[in-house]
Image (tube, rainbow, N blue to C red; front, top):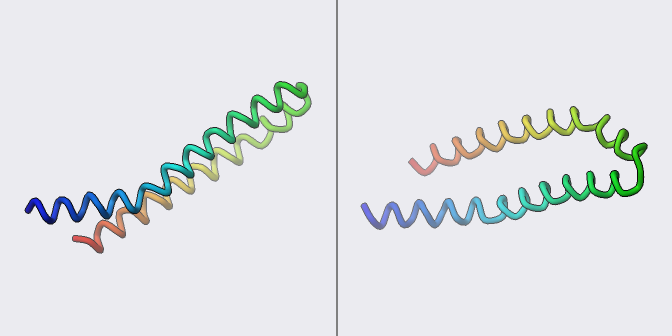
Length: 78
């Protein structure tokens, strides 16, 4: 039982290690975009905010796709 748990944890670490870095990079880029737009002026901010609904929709779709992929990979290990 302990060996199986250790194997599962190692597999999860390998799978999520790269994703955590990508999430951090995406979040920091998001906030850096807002900081850049507020620094340069309100026109850039309006342009960024106009694209925000599309970014939110894409984020939700990606989240659902990642959840589906994760559940399929967990079925493969079971």
